[in-house]
Image (cartoon, rainbow, N blue to C red; front, side):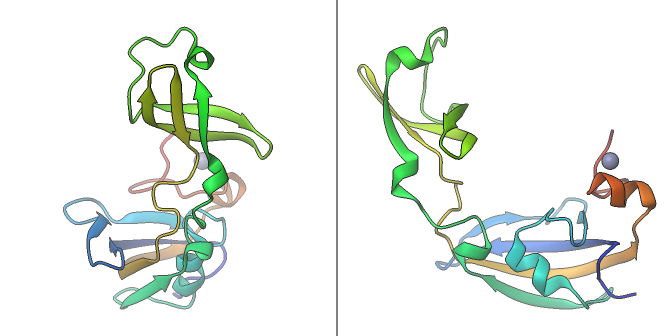
Length: 160
Ligand code: ZN
C-alpha cells in the first residue's frame, strides 16, 4: 500500500539542520504515526511521503517556507513586565499565549531585562532548512473515525 490521502503511515526519522546537528529523532522511540493529507506533519515532508511504501528509506530537504516558516523579526517583541501580572518567577524559556494580529500564538520568553521582557513568537525551528532521513515502517488505511478527527489513532498516534 502506498502513502496517499486517507492512509496512516508510521516512520522513523532523524531531523538535522544545515550544520548537521541532530534536532530531533525517533531513535529509541516508537515511530511517528500520522494521517496523511491532514497537515499533521510539516507540508514539505508530507508532500514527499506520498507514494512511498513500507521499507522505503529516503531523505527529504525542506525549505523554511515548507517547514516551520521563515524567521519573522516582527514576532520578537519587547513588552512591559506588568503584562505578566500574576506570573511569579518570570524566566527565560517560559511559554505564553499572546494575542496578535494573527490571533493567539505561542511565544517564549527570550530575555528579562528589568521591567522589559522580550518574547519571541517564532517557532524554534523557524528559518531552518530541515533535513529529514526517513524510513517507512507501516502504511495502512485510515479508519473513518481517524479521517473525521484528522489524526491517527493507536500506537504512535493520538490517544483520547
Ligand atoms: Zn481522534
